[in-house]
Length: 286
Image 1: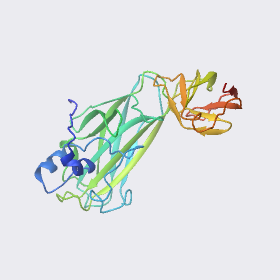
Image 2: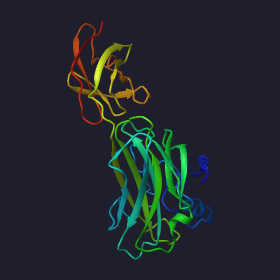
Image 3: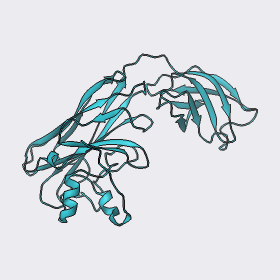
């Protein structure tokens, strides 16, 4: 399937906020939503779902009797391909149309691996989302299964990252709709599934550290996207360098905030996304 291109226009901001199957009275909007929601509405960190005021807000998020699940591997080998399945089930006979959107993210919130379409019921949105270059898979118009009761499911492939990025979490939001042509009466659900890295590696190791005007830079080995710098036992906001795997972690604004002071020794550690912690590393800002 070709990748869909989306144009974001201020005049249709309300449309961009609403996701799901999109059964609205305006025929143009019905067509757009049935072909798939806008990117960035999976319920992942930093994202919304459409269970918000003015959208599909008849019921609170995850409050209905239905089930919404992601079937994914518990662990992954780098570069390997796995089948992912997203499934709706419900005993409610009033649910008669279905939708979903899913993304795969590292612990740091970046795109993890590559999602591949395997049927006409799904399609991709790439380099999109809420301020990030994430990838999404979602239903097509055919994949809303209008008139179908009991549930629906979609299967597609996920190619694991080519290098170890630590645990990967699949986030999805789904709509169990009543097919009434309106955004009312629909039930929105979220689900997540986590795949740990099967790559064996040791605990984090700090090799060196340096400081700029605001930040502390910690260099080492066995870091991942979810690694956190710890200063004197306290977690600090941490940004990896973007390499896979990262080799430099930035503890943000710790100099500016006075967490580290000139001439005062501190003890540094790094904890990775699996919970392994490095040996203490002494550091003194000169």
